[in-house]
Image 1 (spheres, rainbow, N blue to C red):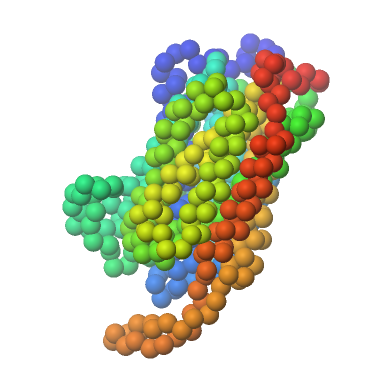
Image 2: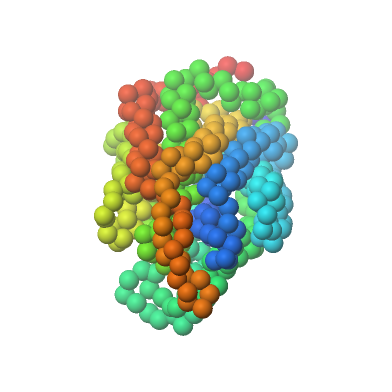
Length: 455
């Protein structure tokens, strides 16, 4: 490795703040719209939504996420590892993705949302792993430094989740002692306004693209012995710990994606206002701040297997809460905190572990390779959502309000969320057992990046 190709360690305090800002923008541009897609996509056209079916929505979200992640190593990882500086690659992908999102927000047809969603995912798909690997490349002690930098992304998710509803979904804001502290009257066309979160995400993507040009220089490994970084990264399957993380990660990724696809609609059915959906779902990210801050300490005290098991278990508990009928709304909203435990202790910890076993010249591709396998999760989620929803959907007669306040009986489909979420809890339980019984930390007695030394 030449001196030019090696990224400098994070010794200057200001560098940590710059990386923190990168994470803030990375997740702010996604957090402002991802939790709302399920609500406005599944809402009827008469309400201002898109009127998609559960099956259409499942394939739209699952297929787009999967294609983006499958192509990520070749569009993002390979280029950043071998051709261009990582910050340049990030800037280009973000600019393209922002344009695509602006176009998507103007569409109403399912086919348009499907194909534009796939194109947008191809652009945005590599950015999460690239931001992770760029930050890790400038850290001397990733296990301790990365969680604190990653907290920037958590706060980035929370801020638009509170600000967007205040600015765009309500009027006549008044102070209240309960979060999000400023609450007003919902706008009459609120369901239609939810789609504008796509424009908000695009604006943040453009801001992030410009910010990338100020990030520390992270050049490619031009003198690396293996020309195809992805091919070299695949050798990590020689290690059981990596294979176990991939298998468990696929299952967790599937139920993780269904959580975002269904929770906004689920909470609306339980009686939560549409203006409160984003703040309520941000409770998971608020909890994530505390857990991420403690991740370094937890890893040093408990080790990777225990922390990963705790994270997987939290997914099981969350869906058990969702599936239990008769629970008060405040408890269902409060159970969002388990999302923070799951993300920090499983997904973020998995990325930290993978950074430990990857050699420096394939960091970007190893992170995106893991993202490839996690992309099988959205495919499973898309394939599972429709049939699972159909299995637990019953037809009921309800009184429906028509114009002039006329109420008439109508046959409507009603999803039994109890059975639906119990199935997801069972999938999470399988992932938890895989980690608890089969994972072994193969870096415990070896220095980071020393496990795989073959060319």
